[in-house]
Length: 353
Image (tube, rainbow, N blue to C red; front, side, top):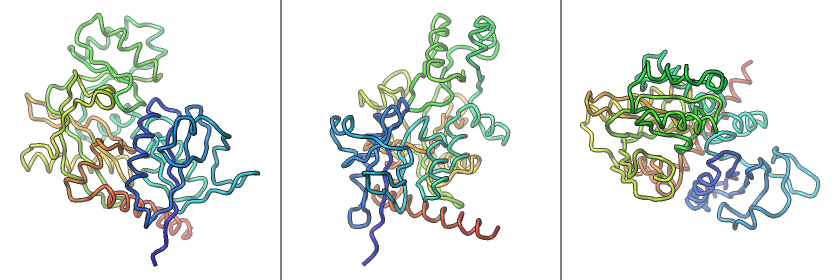
């Protein structure tokens, strides 16, 4: 009989995407084959405390009650059995989960884990650094401006002047380090610019202002390590002004075209650029790359990369692989295989030194 692998599922976390992480973890828990995997569920509270729970479906009471423990869950502590997994599966969206912090912790523990390593996670999380990198590589990104909170507080009128000298309205204002469209505003008139900047600075000390592209929102899933592959692209058709948090997770009125209705050459361009962005940050395992397709020029712009994309029942990452011929269960199998493969390769490289 094939050995059952022990998977430690890490979810919750300190970011504003805490609740989305729980929903993603539930979908993963439900789709991991119990004939192949024994799952240990570790919930991280909003304060960053860790606790073992029955599953991501645990009640709110179970999540809130009972003792918590050290942020090193593999250590054996008095009064608690040691937790060890064959592979760790962090499904922590946003800061303190998708930004390289948990990945660094897992690297220190020398355990295999699903997804991108430290540097790729950090670059992917920071939209400003990501766009700077892609610009240097000649990859197409939406025109942008990076702003710091100290500069805004010191001279807000100069910041507004800089924005108007670079862009015509509308523009998007967004935190540099957050996901799920939290803190993002579309500014269509001057009176809304200051509130939008202040909202974004509530979530991050560094923010971006970007040209608003009129056109289609395209997403593409990437899977692999050294030789990544790209799924068929999908299109997001927002119900609201743009694909914001409410549209994504609360109202459920967004429409999706899966796969996107694109000419084959354009589909190939999306896939090529998605893989290029994945390789640019040296990602591993998985990522979803988001694009804008400008209506007036038919030009593709890379918007951002998500190294721990949503895994809810309605999330694009697994849905795009499903239409590309890979089921949710098989996708999870492959992600775990990739995690173990990367860890083995790293160990071999260390042994050569």
